[in-house]
Structure formats: C-alpha cells, structure tokens
Length: 85
Image (cartoon, rainbow, N blue to C red; front, side):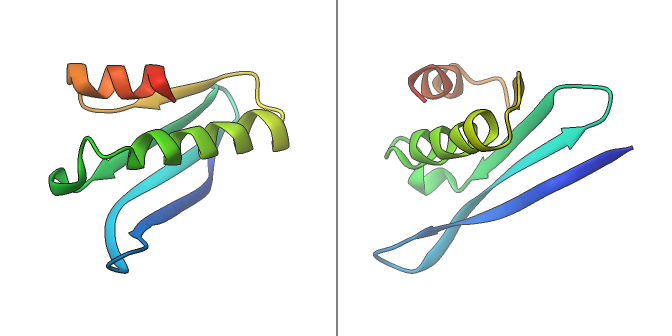
C-alpha cells in the first residue's frame, strides 16, 4: 500500500501559467520517491532545481525521511539538474 503525499502544480509567477508538476510519494515498503514533468519551453531556467530542492527539504527536514528516490526520464540534463538541487 502506498500513500501519496502530494502532487503539486508548478506555476510561473510572471505569467501565472502552469508549467509542470512535481510529486512526492511515501510508501510503506520502499523509500519515498519523487517525480516531475516540466513543459520543455521552461527547461534550463532553474525551475526544477528550485522545486526539487524545496521538495527534498520538506522530505528530509519536516518528514524526517532517510531516502528519497528520483524518478525521471534518463536525459543527461536531468541528471545535472538533480545534482545541483
């Protein structure tokens, strides 16, 4: 049984447009996992670094999680972004 903590819309403040989503799942048997989808037009602008950083901070500091796995499409750019978060 898994419990989904949340799926959050990512809104660009200047345009008030939804540009992606980010989610965090906490499971009974496995470490927590997060995933995201970002509109390709907003890629490379730092949105995901900020969002992933905030989500990991919540997971580790507020929820006291020991591990959080990332789920994403295998693109080298994504690996670099996660490293920077």
